[in-house]
Length: 422
Image (cartoon, rainbow, N blue to C red; front, side, top):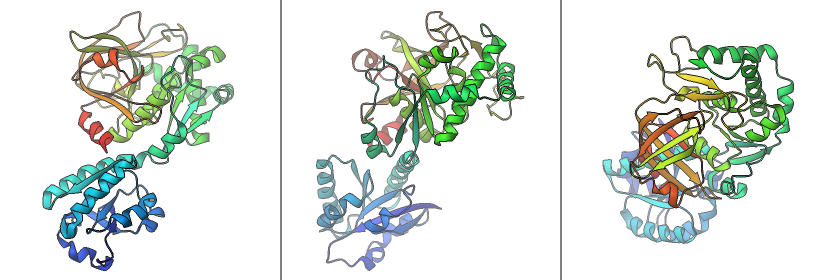
């Protein structure tokens, strides 16, 4: 049974021991689906933060108690009220005051199934938020010099989202690269080449070198216990004369959101996408916008193999590759012409285009999109395809949130919007 914490607040005229009795209908609605635990604000501070927690406004006159406990309450604040004993009136005052403090707050109110539906929706959103709590994002190297609008305020993001950014010198990847086990690198390279539909420019030594980068970054991930990472990949090319494209593709397949160019906003979006959808995201450049058709050509040189099409329609699993052949080619990196990049064909269907941005990651764009076509232009990055967006593509030309955007299979627009609102 799912766990749900309630922090009840009431006036001095109401005894805490009578809460469940005086609000019996509410608890009867919740308890068939939820293991409800009653906590004080102090108990919440010591509790498991992965358990969604609501502030239960049990009566009128609880406003002052709320203000006194404010710093000890969960963020965002979700107020639960059934309206009895003037509790809705108190909730309205509390909600207004909380927004004046610039803290996200919403009120769940109702009875029976209508109330339960609201609880279920918000519970799912809080569960996603709790999955972010304590996650560690490694910034390996520094953000690329051209990402002048894609940085984040580490301290503010930690306070707002519970996510920690760690600066890790790029030299650590280089050092681990020099120490890689060549037999293990050969094994990874062989597996990748056997899966590929075509190998166009790269030689076998090129693929082995790219596999060594993957093993080196895996060592960094293990050393720092990273949940996600972004790599200063262009500087890596100048140091060891190969690319990180294959490494990032394999890491994304393993459930470790991994982005390139040191883009701090995009890697957060990839991590959140993974928590919300349990799917890897494709970090891509919007390379061509057609306002007449409302389409965008997205492209990049790395994509998780699990996101590409399959020759027999089977479902990808990294430990069982014999029954499904992904449709991708091994190419060189587009800008440099060296190393190994992934040119994947994307399956038909619905997609979601999403980006969280701003210094505090408090801005969002999201749109459902429909697959139109795989393309093979020579003047853009290797994996490239056209999506027709539901929202106007003028967004990209008039007020975009940076360059890179994240593409995830399926229609998740509603879920992202609900999550962002809370």
